[in-house]
Length: 393
Ligand SMILES: *Cc1c(COP(=O)(O)O)cnc(C)c1O
Image (tube, rainbow, N blue to C red; front, top):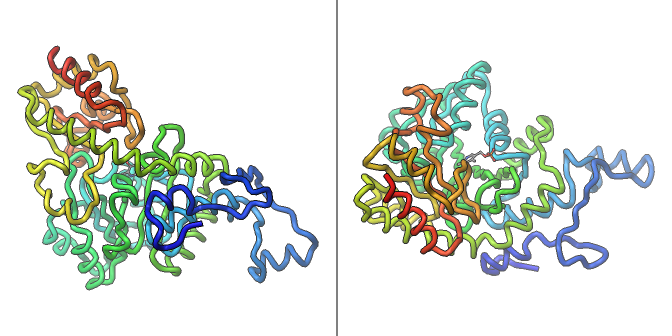
């Protein structure tokens, strides 16, 4: 068992322990959709909330509970709600907090689907949204309207890798009665705890660092207060975007090594970023661990490390990007991030090749931009791979 004073890595191994009758060393998978009652009275009491007990997996399940308890401890929250994906978390938050006519302010470079679902889907329900550069606090203040309800921040936000001051956002949110929501996917609780900096709600795509092995899609919401927890859990169970017990088991397994994976990954990322910054074929590099990063000092204060995500631009632009993609051998050409393997992506020729220039500009996607999620391989192999591919350009 762990207590509040246990270290982060100890909590990663033990915080979700279940009280299993056979003494299982790992969290058992309760692969069941439903739970039986002893008699009619027992069933009635459970459904009336007069007695605790499991009823149906969409509502709660012991394997999923173990993961939720652990994540709530790691993020210093009241409680956690595990869901089927990061986007299920974002949608549950939007639908749980907003009414028709409400307005949200958000980071312009947030994860693409978090913005698309708002601008292309929820706009039909009358939700209003404004996307701005939230690294500039004056921009946030200017965007506040009488109907603004939520300030929704992603930091660092890819591809700009811009870092938003969470403590300052919390002060603005409190002054104007806004709920501060933070997408903490890029940091994981190992590098940043937004609730400690004044956020009300945090969420993760656990598909990325928390699971870390590129074999699960999953999400989680953590709230500071009980009221938000109840509101969002009710929305989640009504929507039915719950996690599956087997998915929870895999995330619990991946989570155990979060600390050592990030330590190694960000050590590698620092060296890769320094290599890229010196390379003659590279125009620019954005990485929180480089002193050239515009919010380098803020990153040092707010985060306990620089993470494993780098974006950089090639002098040879679009053509160079394609050549680089077709000549790396170790890095995998793939979207996603935060796994043990190094992933590389050239949005302009790959994921965003059919996207309009306006939408690309909104997302900060330039033709020369390369995204790199640095894995835990031997760093010299990662550098050698990039180096030989850059030679070919
Ligand atoms: C991947 C990602 C999401 C969406 O998560 P899914 O698990 O793919 O649904 C949201 N935010 C960020 C920052 C992400 O990287």
